[in-house]
Image (cartoon, rainbow, N blue to C red; front, side, top):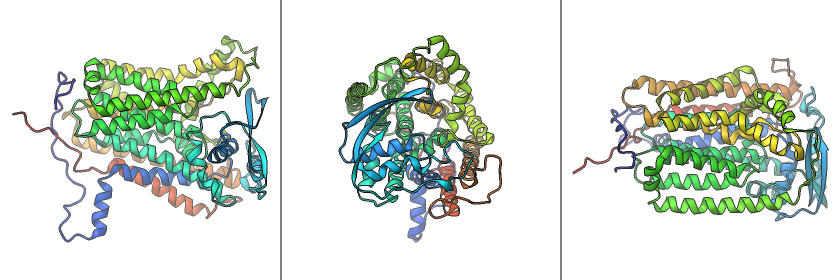
Length: 536
């Protein structure tokens, strides 16, 4: 197949990699055949790994300890019941920024969600003082500050609340969120693993699962789907732009991935449409006009463009409706552009740290080693990508780096007088996570046979191990904070609060999930190399 990038230096064929497993003889047991089949399906490994890690966060985090989770759970339960229009509304200025509260008719027990974590939220006490979920099933108006959010995420997540009893409905919503987000990340791994050198692209996607992103995935918060949908959109869009010699059917799969990821990303939060536009602009710049003309001939790409247009229009219409639910008053007239710029700029370091993780209600700071480890891996990928990329590719990488600081500044200067300064690092996840994904793809595209085979095999695996250790540190810090308010207590005991099933169970689940993700990067599959037939 001759793509528009035929003028680029051709990729040199690589020697067939040594299989990690011996050939399967005819009498091999079915169990071993299933193991081999699973190892040859990286998306399945990733789905298992991401779901187990997210489920670990879902159960090891006390209820209502994700940012604004009580409001998000009320929104999810109301949306699943078909309640899209608010019954009551009020505006509140608290903590330096404004919130709009909308009311929905729900079982009265949902009014107890906030009390489940109020006593230890931002307090140096364990989670043992938290209240239990209520039992009153009579209908009452329950308020939420997420009432004007797009319902795309909340409808599937809220479905378990329709049939699961008691607190099981809350854990059911968390697990539904974990499954949805894990599916999006697994799809991104499936896209990345189709490259001829899959170690680097798969590492980029796995690295996008920061502790913060996976914590949000395992709790009820639309910010989690914003991050995971963005990872799928970045992996699919950049694969379309960079791969000049795709395997049969890969253009279709990548177009589907971009359509799904882009449509969901647009319909999450207020910046969703802008983040989708950034992926498309990056695709145009990296691909160039000749590659775009070649891609436009594919039916799947044409359908993808239509899906993105429809998704963008739906997101715009909901945004216009949501604007009618919020106040247009300038609640913070003293926040001039100069004041906002100064405060947000000097908080940039905090926002960058929060990308990796500041869990709970921003009251669970991660150990320094976890943050350093993630940025070491991301820095490795970015520096390597800058070293091998062409000018327009490195320009996109540089723009992503600069935008990490610039976007919070622009967004807050434009909106501070209405809503106050309430920026958090998780709001930029959909932008930042494009960096490791794009960097991994650039390594797979630009590095030829001159890269030593051992380096290509070992570096992604070693980096995945580093990320796994960082994830263990994040989980341990969170455990001690909730088990015995262990801000400065580094021992496991005394245990004052435990999740359902006990800590050992969820440590095992979480650790297995991390191990499976490391295996997703480390396993060398035998069917990843493909070369077109020789020309006649």
